[in-house]
Amino acid sequence: MQSLYSNGFEKVYDEMYQSFIDYDDEYKFYSNLINKHKKSNVLEIGCGSGNLAKRFINSTLGYIGLDLSEDMVRLSKLKNPSGTFIQGDITKYALKKPLESTIITGRTSSYLLSNKTIHSALKTIHNNLTVDGILCFDFIDANRFIKSIKGGKKVYHEAYFDNKCYYRESYMKDNNLDNFMFNWDSAYYQKTKSETIKLTEDKSIVRAFTKNEWELFLYLNNFELLEFIDRKSYAFDTYVVVAKKI
Ligand SMILES: C[S@@+](CC[C@H](N)C(=O)[O-])C[C@H]1O[C@@H](n2cnc3c(N)ncnc32)[C@H](O)[C@@H]1O
Image: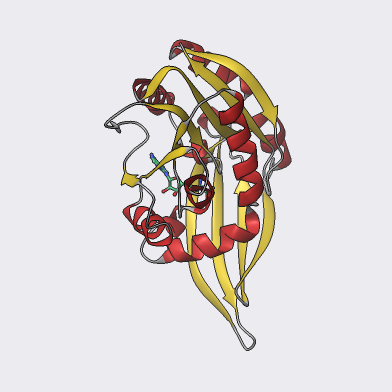
C-alpha cells in the first residue's frame, strides 16, 4: 500500500479511502476518547491525506497532523489550509511543545516492523506528550487476522468517489515471517465505462500484533495500559489501545 502514499498516488489514496473508512465515525470514536480523558489537543501521527484532520480542525480540540510522506503532508495542507501539518517520522519527531494526546489510526502501526522501531516510536511519543498524556492507536490483531490469511487469501475492495470507480486486488499471506509480519501484494485499478486502467501495484510487508506484545512494549516504555477496545475495521480484525504516559 505504500505506493499510494506519494508521487501523485496520494490523491488516489485520498479518494479510495473515503470509501473504505468512515471518517465521521473515526472522528467520533477518537474525539470521544480524547474528551473522556479531558485532553484539549491532539497529535495525529500518520495523518495521511488529512481526512480525520478536517474533522478535528473544525472541532474545539487543538490539532497537529504529522506524516512521513511529504506528498501526504502537502495534500493535507491543500485540503485543510487552516490546519498545522508537519513532515516527520514516528521514531524521531520533536514538537515545539508537548501535546496532551496522540493518536495513530488506520493501522499505521503495521509499519512498525521491528521491536527496535517500536521502542524508538514509543520513546519519541512519550517525549512529546504532557504528563498524564494519552496515546490511542489501532493495530491488526494477529490472533484473528493471521489465522484468517493462513495459506494465502485474495481480497477485493471497491471504492467510489465523484463518479469514479476504483478497485484493489490484494493477496495476503502469512509466510511464517518474523513478528507476525505478513506479505500484502496489491494492484490498484480505475474502471471507466469503456476500460479498466491499472494505476499501480505494490508489495509490502506489514505487521500484526498480539495484545500481549503491546502490553509489554507499553510497560517497557513507561505507558500504563488503560484498555483494549475491539473495533472491527473495513478489512481487518483490529484493536484500539488506550494508554497513559507515566
Ligand atoms: C494506512 S495510512 C493511514 C492514513 C490515515 N491515518 C487514514 O486513516 O487515512 C498510513 C500513513 O502513515 C504514514 N506513515 C508510514 N510510516 C510512517 C512513519 N514512520 N512516521 C510517520 N508516518 C508514517 C504513511 O505515509 C501514511 O500516510
